[in-house]
Image (cartoon, rainbow, N blue to C red):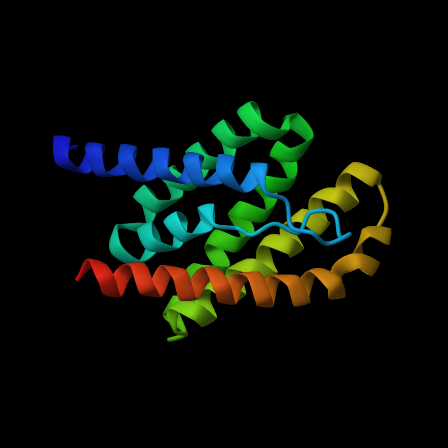
Length: 159
């Protein structure tokens, strides 16, 4: 692995963690647990679009591990990991289907929430968490759209 590639991965990983920290400082003013801005996902989407998939996946894993250990705890790790993995592969599929950056991000937001609901169902030993899914689909669409728009803006500015 070349030094420039390693440096690029390290910088994007650090940026994702910093955004995750900032996100933890400013929870959304809604009474819906688990709804977050997702600004650290801008970095993951950017990496998925501008780097190879394995590098983007590595950045995702670093972000989930470090943010969970430093800012939220082990229970949050299971939710973030489940959501992150499912979201990542949903975004790859969305890109293959020709969705825009914003559409891809929205798909990622919805599937991230699906992954969190699946993790909650496993942890609770019940599918009752799925009653909460329609609310999370809406939040995934809104937050994913905002994240996608920000990522698109970053990419356009970097050209």
